[in-house]
Image (tube, rainbow, N blue to C red; front, side, top):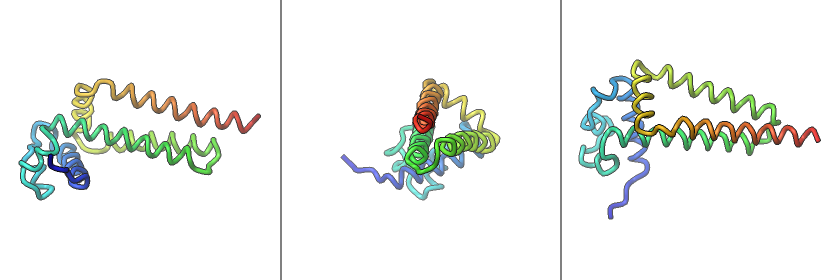
Length: 143
């Protein structure tokens, strides 16, 4: 079995995200994504079987980044109040970035919700858990 390069996978995802935001799902072709990365389209298909697969991978990468950022905040030396502030501000920033990411942002969000309908619930669950941890830490400091 061939071993796939994680850096190449990341480059594909980044190129796909840019193209999808600019042109939308229908006008984005797998061949164009491959050209943007400088690989053959056959190589692209080793990593992703279709655009839906790319969309799912993109949203899963977003979810992982959310967790990494939250862990950085939770493990920081900041006070619980600062942690909560930084976490909430980051959540709003990410939402704002998505909203400003191009004219096809709403189309992409709808497509992702169809492909991975549980994603919003997963993110909400993570947010509740992270906020609860921070609040619990604040309460423990009081007592």
